[in-house]
Every structure is written in structure tokens, then in C-alpha cells.
Length: 131
Figure 1 (cartoon, rainbow, N blue to C red):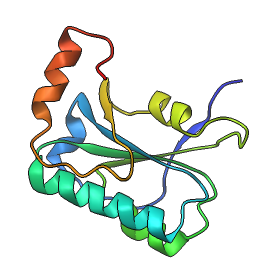
Figure 2 (figure 1 turned 90 degrees about the vertical axis):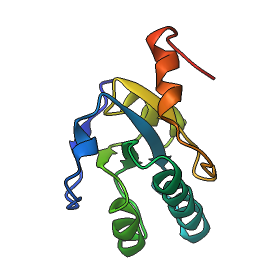
Figure 3 (figure 1 turned 45 degrees about the horizontal axis):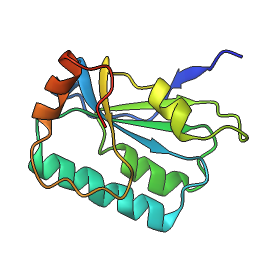
């Protein structure tokens, strides 16, 4: 079965970071609610504060229930990808596969970024996967 990836109809700010070939990817499940969105917001803000040149994408699934809060969170990202998700498939794997970047660093919603992450992408010049 082929994944359907559709652009989200949420206006995002144009950023020079949108033209990068690498970036950070967060995944947001369709049933994400208050505490999850708060942790995601804190993580993205720590990324922006400590690695301001790193582009950030959000991969999410059609049917987010808390639309007003989702719209506020979506504005923190350079790119937002909405995909139709099979509820019986792990939501992280499709999120990784839908990354808009050629080289991606996947972060969980509760990660606090404490330093610049740009040097991590250099590992992907030599290795296919860095864990």
C-alpha cells in the first residue's frame, strides 16, 4: 500500500532553513493532546534556542483532534507534512519515512536540546544511520 502524503493547509512562516537538505524531524500522532503538545513545544523551543540554524519538520497524521492547539504548535516548524495513517501501524515509522529532508535526525517530543546539533549531520556523510 502506498503512503499518501499531503501538504498541510496551515500557513507557516517562510524561512531560509526550508531549503536545507537536512533537518530535525518530530512526529505527532493524531491523538496527541495537552501534555504531549506541551512537551513537543518545549522541545522545539529548546532546539530553536540552542541550534537556531537547524531546520525543523513536523510529520503528523490527518485527524488531529485538538485543532486550535495543533495550529499553534505547527507555527514552530519550517515544514509540516500531513499523511494518512493506518491506525494499526506504529506512528513513528511512517513519520521517519515521510521526512522532507535527505538527512534526518528524529527527535522524540520530550527531548531537551542543550547544544547546537549541526555537527550531528556530518555523521550521515559517512554512515547511513547514526544512533
